[in-house]
Each structure stands twice: as structure tokens, then as C-alpha cells.
Length: 90
Image 1 (tube, rainbow, N blue to C red):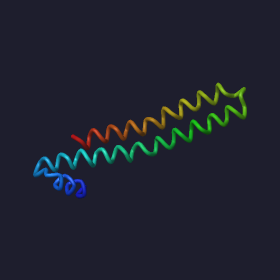
Image 2 (spheres, rainbow, N blue to C red; image 1 turned 60 degrees about the horizontal axis):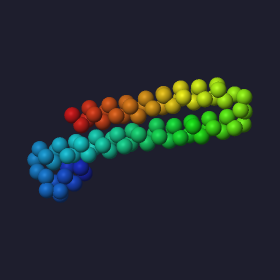
Image 3 (spheres, rainbow, N blue to C red; image 1 turned 90 degrees about the vertical axis):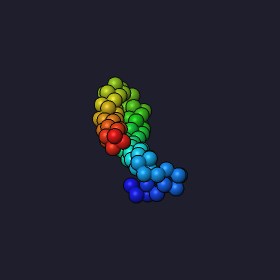
Image 4 (cartoon, rainbow, N blue to C red; image 1 turned 180 degrees about the horizontal axis):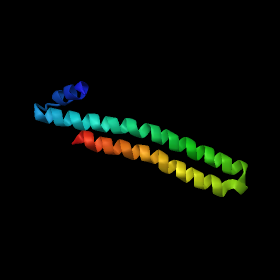
């Protein structure tokens, strides 16, 4: 957090402006970190699902359903990160 305050001060902001910019910067950084995990997880999940459907086309319906459930649960992590982003920013 201190790094963001120093960056804001270097940009010419003072006092409350620097603190507000610091909070916004750290909240954005936190959301960026929170979005990395779900992004990797969804990419891995979809890749493996496509691989499973290519190996056993007759099971594609069940694999697709399971894939969408996994995507929904993984995406919930990104949404939780977004809520934390909003709470930190306020």
C-alpha cells in the first residue's frame, strides 16, 4: 500500500488525493490478482473438457454439463474478488 502512496505523491497528488488514489490502485491490484486464478482455472477446465469430448464423443453431453458447472463455480471466485475490490475501494 505504501508503494501506491509514493507513486501517487510522485504524480503530484497530495494528502487525501494521494490516499484515495492509493486505495483505488491497491484495490485494482487486488482484483487483478483475484482474477488470475479463475482465469487459469477456466482455461484448464475448458481445455480438458474439449480433450475429453474429442476422446469420447458419446459422453460429450455429460462432459459439457459438468464443464459448465465447473465454470460457474470457478467464476464465483472471480466475482468474490470483484466484491472485495469494491469493498476495498470504498
